[in-house]
Length: 494
Ligand code: NAD
Image 1: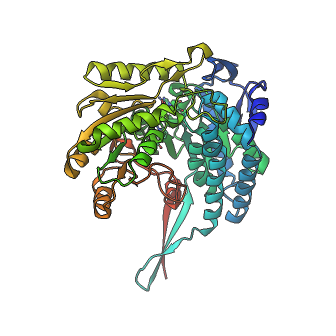
Image 2: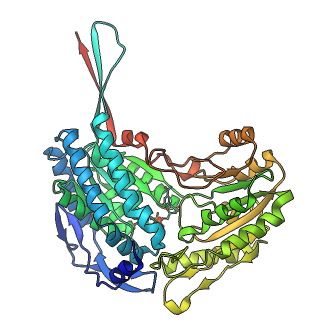
Image 3: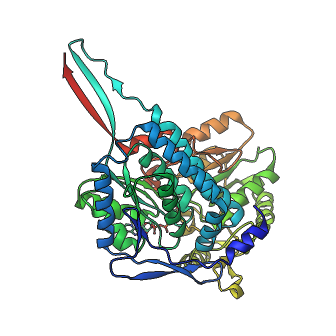
């Protein structure tokens, strides 16, 4: 990837994007559109369809008939695998175009977006392409006079509701297994980052995915997302986003057909540094990267730094120094370490969280402000708040922006108490040179992942999911496949 290639793509006019329903690009029934505001400059980039419940229902009907006539689920797994591999090839061939389009839409720094979005999405689709022809049914250990068979069958129509921070990567975590095992899918992309998911679905058609198997409908969550979640024709919903929306989806399921609802929600992940850590400078750099990449808009961001008291002062200073190097800049420059905030609304929420933190007794030791106002876009300085206590809002509630808090702890027991002291349980990190302590911490921390002497970076081979109010179902790995299949028993008298 060269800067000159990015520079050419960043000025390309972006045509209005339409829904993809039944294999066709179509506008909303009403013709309504909504502006796509680029967070890089704060001005309109293009438009997407501002769809209604009727548009969503058309997409669900298309997915349902595609499932019922078996045009996809009726194909042998080896044939589906071939299409998925071709799709991954096409995503890779268009990786730069997709990455730049996505960055213009959501503001992530291009160096990260290129790998984390198209390349990671392609890798995930390949992983599931390779998995689906290795799923066997089972024979139950019954008495001799019966045969108990366990079949794994696709559910039917799956709804996927996606957030704006990494739409392609998170989309692929759901689409790979859901489509791979034969379901039809309707995607509801996020209002502020829809474009790449539509483009990705177009490439799926080009790869040979039959029409109607993958549909994408854009618009407001409270309208089209709700219509998807309330549909009696959708058998499962796979969601990544906020806890507020996640709760609504469970209500919609209860009000409709009791569809399965898989939730991947937010986090307030602790990053814990024991004073016996060997290389504190490396740890400080990783702590800074673990919160400030993509301006903190990462579900697993290590947003609560817990430091053993005897090293607190020096370590905090090292983190501040490392964080100063992660100032936001133009997301389409290859050397930018941290991009834009996704929207004006999110920026205001971040600034408000800092204000509240200060009111409650926190002390801002780095940043705290909006920056690069001259660009017209949405940027915020890496922000570090010291003297944050257990009951402060900023310790308890996710910001989803570039805000790190610092809180000291005395010993292992105290660290665990602080780490587990929020409603969330998504990710965490522990730095120590004591192997036994590392294992004890892995067992003791309530989280879907505990990183040890590193942070982030887990690949598709391992699950990502939260416990407590961070969610109820993991994406990634072979474990995700079962979410998109029903078990059926055949009980046969011999
Ligand atoms: P959000 O809940 O506002 O929106 C997520 C999606 O839900 C969007 O597509 C939106 O249109 C849709 N939606 C909104 N209201 C809806 C409704 N009433 N019915 C149906 N759909 C609706 O979240 P967001 O702001 O896009 O994303 C940020 C949140 O996502 C953060 O809390 C972050 O931690 C979380 N997140 C979690 C993970 C994870 O893997 N656990 C990954 C990324 C982001």
